[in-house]
Length: 265
Ligand SMILES: Nc1ncnc2c1ncn2[C@@H]1O[C@H](COP(=O)(O)OP(=O)(O)OP(=O)(O)O)[C@@H](O)[C@H]1O
Ligand SMILES: [Mg+2]
Image (cartoon, rainbow, N blue to C red; front, side, top):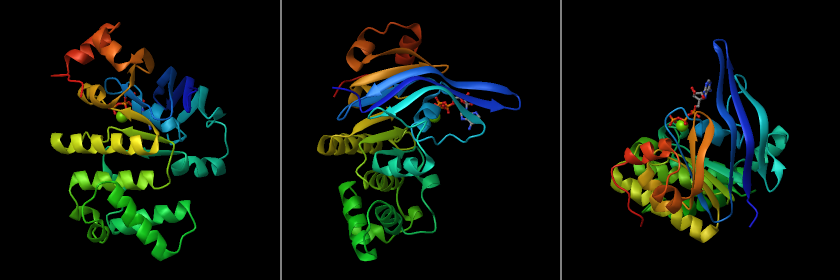
């Protein structure tokens, strides 16, 4: 199967007054429909910068895409117009971040925020968008979505807020979901439920998932393949079982050692 999203030889530079930081130094990775690719690596290894490059969300300046391609269905997203990119965001590729509090508007009811996204993707009346928003909250596993839709972000737990973000990300039926540490801020049981939700939604909709995490337990549970980044370079990649059982690099071995326990679900 040819990959849906393919990054080849990507070079991301942050050109700062103090010098140039190379966040991606020839990164290549690919993910197909229905597949989950995990991207792991220590802090500062370039995971987020690489993920943000897919929708060209790194701040330019200081960011410069100095080389390589980000191909969605063979089309280079680093070279499409802003207008096309806006269409691609949410419709083809959506993102979920670590901290839903920073992405949600604290002054707006969550139902209205999801409804806004609905209206961005389809021409719907206010009432229809409301209804679609409640349906999206339900699909994201939020109990009593009608009531929750009328609440403000601070009235929801961290886990529910992350489900709202997932509802917003998936309402445009994206083919690629990029999740950057989506469960890091949550406690362990909530983490597990959010991951189950993602896996379930992927099964139903067949999307490709790029999951950024430093938690190798999470990788073992949900990913098919893994890419290990270090200082902006891919030091190792392959299917999860072989990389975990026979890591070729000391760096990967150290990452694995830092993880308390690995069990494949
Ligand atoms: N907007 C920015 N301006 C300047 N430098 C940046 C910017 N974003 C990232 N960088 C730099 O790029 C490098 C890679 O950062 P990135 O955020 O991609 O790491 P990461 O692997 O996601 O780390 P973490 O696990 O801590 O989230 C780091 O050296 C970082 O300081
Ligand atoms: Mg990051």
